[in-house]
Image (cartoon, rainbow, N blue to C red; front, side, top):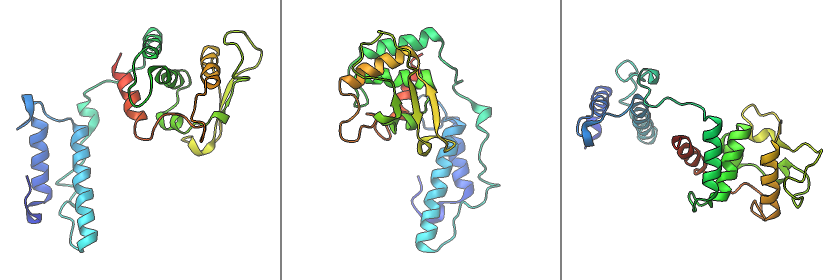
Length: 212
């Protein structure tokens, strides 16, 4: 909508964002959320900052009073909630038989979902896991055969939010699945890292969240 630098200022951007929130010119007349509005506001500000640094001119969006950040809690479009036990089990079991999505077969996505749900891991933590972080006994052991050894996951400090090593006990059912997965060659042979790709994990887990 803007064709010249002189058209960009806090007032015009604020007015355009308001129109988008009101749904003007949008399919179905549905306005964008406060969260989306804040994201667009930040993108505009960062673009103007880049121009300012490159061409040594003032940033026209430097007036926070005219272009304030909106309180997203006042416009919550979707209430997040945890999955019920039966919903989580259905997600894990159903995904195991699904075709490839997000560059991963359903069986692998099912294990990733199982890790996220059972251990509360974030997608970036799962993405950066290595085979050696899992202490689950012999990968060739017969699943369900029973063992006195407690399976654990050692989270390296470089991948945790608090930058401290974490030790998490792995439930027996998940440990059995991981033993089978590793015995079948799970994790890439070269790096021995999680098959989840950068930039794909968040979208994959968000899709699972919306599936309930």
